[in-house]
Amino acid sequence: SVPREGPRDENGHGTAIAGLVASSSGVAPGAELISIKALQHDGTGQWSWVAAALDQALELQADIAVMALGGKSGSDMVIDAIVAFLESGGVVVAAAGNSGRPRLDFPANTGLCIVATAVDRYGSVPPWANGGPWPRSPDIATPGLGIPVLALHGGETQMSGTSLSTGLAGGCLALAYAAMPRLRGLAREMSRDPKTAESLPGQLVELHKRFQLSASPLGQARDRIGYGLLDAQARA
Image (cartoon, rainbow, N blue to C red; front, side, top):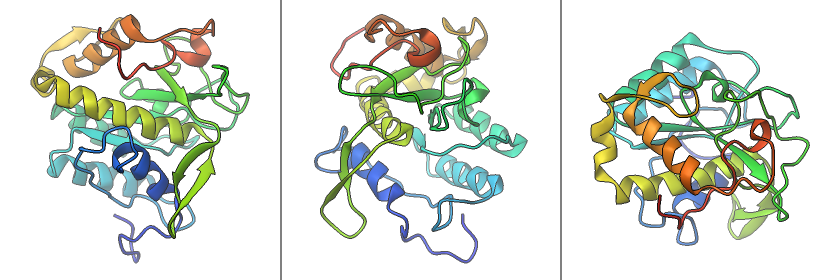
């Protein structure tokens, strides 16, 4: 999806996120991973490239689109691609952002994604993680500071950021789809989302409900942490 660049990761960010999702030490090691290059080697790009990557994920019938990226500007083209992905029965997980602002990055701020933020080892949200007024706030938190990840040229390194949280949340969502095959079938079932009180595709609403019932608030404000710390082993 990136003009004049092949699929090879030349940055390391994609390798790190992919490893968190589906490597042998990742959250969902049995998941089938589809890597689609949406940004160029320096981590920048066009929203049209991101939309094209989502369209490709849709064509390949992916369940989860892990969007460990974001920006201050928006794009109707990306929104349309996310809506199409949701209508197929999939779900998009997006990063809250790392600029310390009181509002989420795009596309996390659309209300169409599961939004991941970061917490440290003590369960606190770092000051650089974006928040937002409830309900346009993060949905869920996972560890996001000093996370061991696969390095681009082999071995491991450590990284921090809400992108890492997005990868971990994406792996947990893959487990949810494996455990609940009916999730894709809820795509046409419009339901009242407990977070937004809006009518949204059923699979997105079902995931919000499960976060609401199983996540640990950790005494943090919802504007910062949403439903709380994700518990991959909880049954709700």
